[in-house]
Length: 207
Image (spheres, helix red, strand yellow):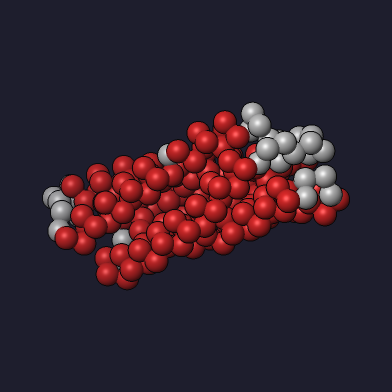
């Protein structure tokens, strides 16, 4: 790998490492609190971790196979992006079902989810800037999708952070009750939108 490809490899690897604890901590947090936004965020982060792992594996394979032509690499990368898109859509639909099927009256302790979302908002913004820079220099489809994904993730994490902060400060209020549901729906909508856009763009090229 050249210097730019090594930078992309290290960035994807770091993304996987830093994203791995999120679902575990949020899974534990669900034993303490039952916020709709918290449940949706757990589902979202689990799906995103699977998508990140897939992107990392494909990026590693395509950049180690130096003898392969550009068309083969592009085909593999776009198939990986379609897979990522399907994961996002399935996750978004699952979150909508969970939002309206779960009991949201008793929120419990949502502090673990709040701190994960706060850290995520900061980390995802930094990753967005890094992936955008890498994509401009390398023009790799995997890195381009990650730039879009992390840009949207940073916005969603800000929304989740504010929603959970409201639940922490006003756990029994009507405002936090409805904001929690709205926050969950917004996260679900984000996943569906990103998933559909990713599938559409890459499916057209494959077809």
